[in-house]
Image (cartoon, rainbow, N blue to C red; front, side, top):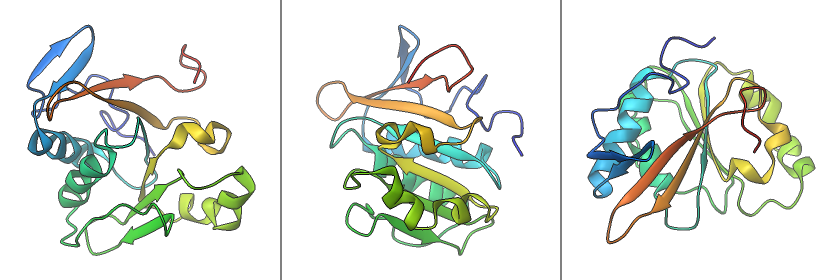
Length: 166
């Protein structure tokens, strides 16, 4: 169930260092993690947060902040090779997916994707734009881009049915 702010609408994260053209500029990795903390504080059971962007754009760094805000003390690393990491030591479980190495949606299905969505945790999905058909309606979509030395540009994207195609 979505609560106010969990989808990113109307939320002005404390981590934003500046804004330009509707995008937030995060000046360093700490600001990217702080933005993730803001998302994590707003997130709750059943929320799906999709993170898109190139290699090195800061997707995993953002999830580090989310995990901390959700109360996890675990070391957060990229699940590039394992595809999913579970952080269940916080107030709400966090299931962190990286779809970069998957070639088909069927591979995601075989990993138990639907079961994760039903587990009442927060699901963070890096490279979600590889399989948008697998993402439930109501997910929060974010695009991270490199914006110069150590800086990141992050833009909230709308999901299917909200006026913007993926």
